[in-house]
Amino acid sequence: MIRALCLNGDCKHAMHVYLKHTASLEKSRYGIAPEILCEMVGGLCKHALIDEAYEILSEAQSGSRSIYVWNTYFDGLVRHPQKTLKGRSVGLLERFQEAIQDMHRIDGIEPDTVTWSVWIRACFELGDWHGAYKCFRDYFAIMSRDVASWDTVIRGLFQSNSSEAHAVGWQLVEEFISISATNPSRKDVSSSTVVVADSRLVETVLLHCFPRFSDVKSTYAYEVLSKDAFKKVVLWIEARVSPQRKISHAIIIGTLLKSGQIRAALDMHQDMIDRQLWPTKSINCMIVKALVLAGSRRRALGSAADATKDAEDFIERRVPKQHYAAAYLPLVKCAALDRRYVDMWVLINRHYPWVVPKQEEEEEAAAAADTSRPFPDAAMYQAVLSATEATADWSENRRLLDKLRHHLDLVCDSGDKKFKTKMVGVYNHYIKKHI
Image (cartoon, rainbow, N blue to C red; front, side, top):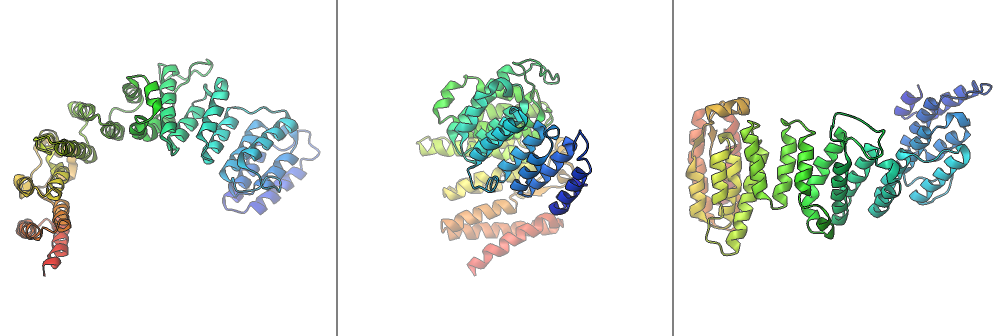
């Protein structure tokens, strides 16, 4: 009942129920159940009633105040750092320290792993990642056996606005892997040196660790990592996620591309194809953009090679036809912005006016592959028309509009309204500028 009242925001009524229940147990030597006390303290903390929560906590019988209840209160302090402690305005860590001292003085309870994890969160809330990391190291003997503690500090380091913190985070990930259990399905917390990763920590590494790898390479801490640190973490992830989970591959491939490891990204892409785990459109487009950017850099350095040749080869050899329009978009846009109009028209006409998915691609594309698709599509026309407008090449802009107009006649004749509506919208938007 107390939980329901607090969830509805009626903390006053909840306190009334709690105090009434407490009064009925005054003569009992057992006092109120710790679970009920925890619900009351937690409910008040959720609504930022920190002083009221402390009053309820401190007035409860000693037997009702467990470390679990105290940790609930500590969590409330961190969630609402702007609130006062016992009527005084003090800093978050100072309030936290006083509360820990109260816990020891009143109940003789020592902080546990959860307590220090909350302290680490408080440090990160204040932007003090050094303090959070120091706390983890100071109490490493007890925190290293708790996977939630590893998750808290690793996630906090990667969410910090510091490439140095990201580098320290990578060091921790590598350290965790080195001491983690070899069998991810077995949970043995009795050992002081073995800890087993759970799904939450795997998600943290995937979503926060990999995307920061390019930042780490620019810091001194990168040299501290082993040479095969990235590969080691990739293998660790692959052993703990479903091989059919495309989002994991997308994150790792994106990280490889950002850190300049295009060949490694291409190898992983090919591995997906070999296992018939067909890469998504977003994965294909990520690689195409990286190849175009790499080609543009080579061109800027004086290379005579075609800036988009590698990207074109990749598309024609590995990308399913239903992704052609999206994959070719960065190429035609790059050509238009560079005023390489011969190349732009070659790309536009390469599969004009349609691409028809192959029979073996239909299962992967499902309903989307049961029809031919216009090439270029509305997004490609939008990109090149915008580029020629930006460079004030109105003659090319007009030629593109004429091409689009003729293409529209073909699309309209096919009766496919899904593509027609978008292409008509692009044409109407740009033709007005020539009137």
